[in-house]
Image (cartoon, rainbow, N blue to C red):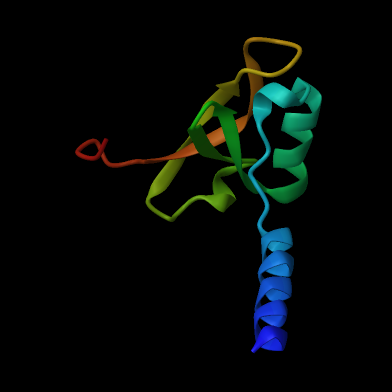
Length: 95
């Protein structure tokens, strides 16, 4: 019984190592935030506290019925940093 509990505990610890938090824009420079979007094409970036959003390098990372809007986030070195774009519905009836 003890061996089973130790094994389950060890597996629980290794599972926690795989969980990764999203990068926080306020902890990184503007250039680092922008480079992450360019390098990955699309990322979820924390923008302070419990807020976050998905940022993309170009419209190719959006759904077929979406368009892009410029996106700025606060960064460690500037209050407004252009990181790329957000995908938004192109329909005038959707918000």
